[in-house]
Image (cartoon, rainbow, N blue to C red; front, side, top):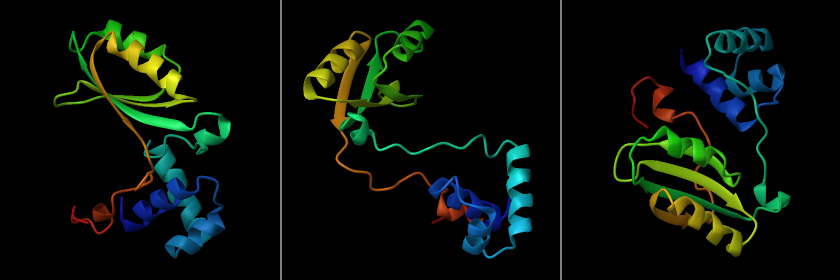
Length: 151
């Protein structure tokens, strides 16, 4: 993994449908070299798939939030199995620290958010923060491009 691979990953996060020619212009390599690198990254399991970015507000889910949850029973698989069934949850991370779980969710209204919070609260103490905007979109950490681990 060198700086070109990392630059390619960043460009693909920005636009997973970019052509090899477009990617080549972004990273200053030839299109065949880009195609070969992308194929190697896929074969190595670094690139695990491609996905569309969706504007949730345009599909009737204008309220996004982050929910921290401190579980009554830490690490109980039963709880995680129940959380998976809640359709408003878009991501769920098991984490270290005070909360056991951090989740991202999207809802259509404040009453729906209240219902979601009530559902989640059955499993422990929760704290909800409404997302106002995204300051940083998904990206490859820049410090690793130069290989020094620092931004």
